[in-house]
Image (cartoon, rainbow, N blue to C red):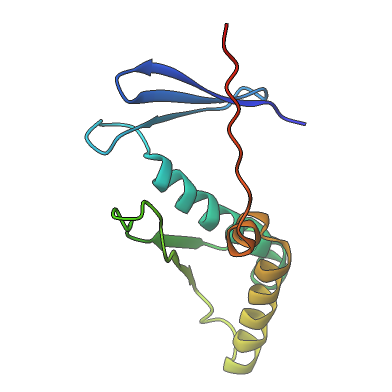
Length: 135
């Protein structure tokens, strides 16, 4: 299992780490060059959808197909939640006839619904706990 942690690097600035050597810069909206936690949440949803659909799309469109998944969702600051996250998967299906394109889109939707752990977790409403470890 990969260890994950976030370390404070300045005022409202953090670096997220993984034991596999990955890093991501995190901070508030007014800090250049960082993602906010909410942006990372939305990116995680989009990346999960992309990964969940990648095999099906590559099988039909070829390994070098292009795809962009745009993701958005405004925060409800009164309640501090993202009530809705919208994804748009951009694909070039012009080489497929309309019936084949629709079948592929159905397969992609099913794959995302079945194996996108991030999306499934958000839809299910995960329990989040915080424990304090003090000296």
